[in-house]
Image (cartoon, rainbow, N blue to C red; front, side, top):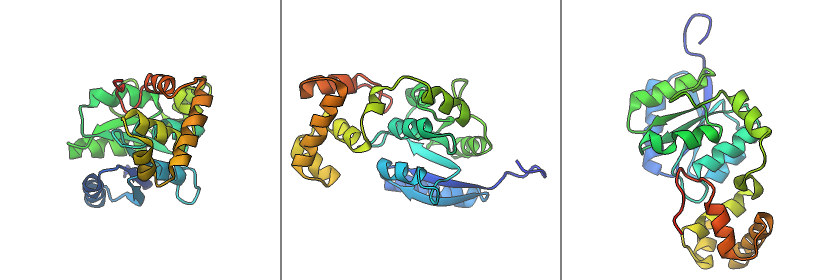
Length: 226
């Protein structure tokens, strides 16, 4: 809030791999939250990471969908928060909040809100933009979450690059190298290189062992069934 009690202006970025969801969120921002300036939207988690690390594109607040494909919303939140505390993070989902709330807080988000309730989205976004938390007692402010993650031992998610993490996520979904290459717009040889590098970083000798280690970590608010 500013000195007159009005909501302070802030900039915003949104990542959600559902085009209709992005359109709906943009409408809500435009019609209901005039203090927000929407800098960008993207359906690509890796693009959101790139924007968040670029001083010219970095928003004050990011809304991050939890159930994204290719690169999970939890991975996006964790990597942004481990790197710094400049961007406040609001996790969003169309699923039950309990499915993602604990994982989102551990990943460094400042709050969680449902995409199914416009009032909840507005309340969550304004609370997080004002430097607060929203959606439960487990959430921390951006500086507190950054301090915790910066000083925590590296997790499986921290070991891999964004592209390696994308490759392992798709591999865990049962896709073959050819399909993964098409999804990531790279060659099959590049996919195999990412898998080999991931195996080395994860300290294993086979793809199966790599999958067991990778999917044993909490991702997208669920554990993959192998």
